[in-house]
Amino acid sequence: MIRAGARLVRCGVLMAVLLLAACGEPASRTPTADDRDVGVYAERRSKLMAEIRASERGISEPVLAAVERVDRHRFVRPENVNEAYENRPLPIGEGQTISQPLIVAMMTEALGISPGDRVLEIGTGSGYQAAVLAEMGAKVYSVEIIPPLAGWSEENLRDAGYEGIEQRTDDGYFGWEDEAPFDGIIVTAAPDHVPQPLIRQLKVGGRMIVPVGPPGFYQTLWQIEQTADGVVAENLGLVRFVPLTGEMSAEDS
Image (tube, rainbow, N blue to C red; front, side, top):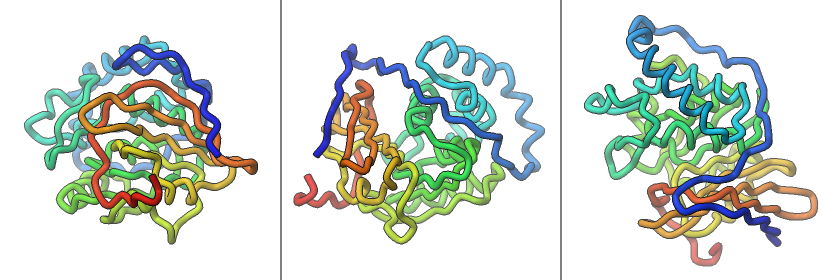
């Protein structure tokens, strides 16, 4: 049984102040030959981080630092590289987007992970969210259903120096059962209902962050926690994501 605690929200704006502070040391990242390019984006990155800090969304310093360490320009298409540090989603092809940095930070905060936690990401996309999770010290497992994106994200993560992320091309609705259970699950596309296979792959005490709702509209972002007494869900407000694609079993709806 899911016990839901809803919050008042304004349409289109995520209103929840996320209270958990994820903590940890920076993940180790292998330096790359392109690190000399980072300085070109320093001013834009600083402006982006100032905007995120000014949002007053209850994002902890460890999460802010993890977002700041990720070179977002490595995870966008070449034609959008000059927009990489704008606080908005960008198209990455195949009808998908790289999420707005503020939303990535808020979802990471809501996940409440610690260094060493095992985290499943559904929807690798360009690899950006996976990189942020790695910077939080998590052991990341990421599933992408679209083969061209799966190959591109693997290349992006490798080129950016994130070599410890496990990736798989598959239908993320069913999770990654062979590696379950997970301390956290983060879903970066919106199913029209909460996938029950993912709930079953959460550890007791683990959390899942998932946007749920019909395509083409705003969805509700849910924080779902697996407890010894059952599942507890909290409404974190309204967001807008591309739909989760793949086979969604009617019996799980």
